[in-house]
Image 1 (cartoon, one colour):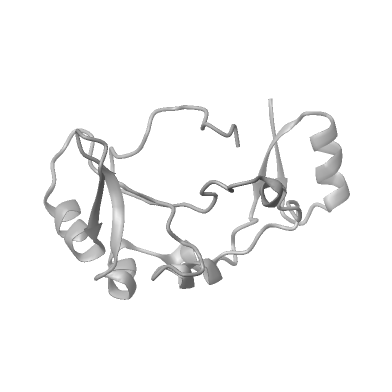
Image 2 (cartoon, rainbow, N blue to C red):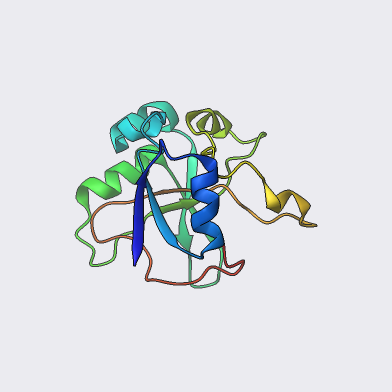
Length: 144
């Protein structure tokens, strides 16, 4: 079963659930995040000319569209499985780095364990898409 608790729970209460191996949903933990009010139009207003990864072609090459072009696609597409933004280029030197100020790490996860990995893989992602877009259930390669 899945335990649900409010973000007012203490770190100790969360740690106890973790020790028990209890799956949990933390309600309200992102209420103060700026992205809660984002829309495609708002994202396009701020990052319309910036290119975003939306997939790969038949040869494995990354496909990128500006958010303005992606919005045109979203408004006009009738695809069974539409393209969606799946972009990890949010680092400090990226034109999208200001997105990072919109998020904060919940108090329950103070340790960045991935900092200890040599050749750290991408670990911050921006995902967005219209209805019917997305991926099937899977376990990512790092089992995060």
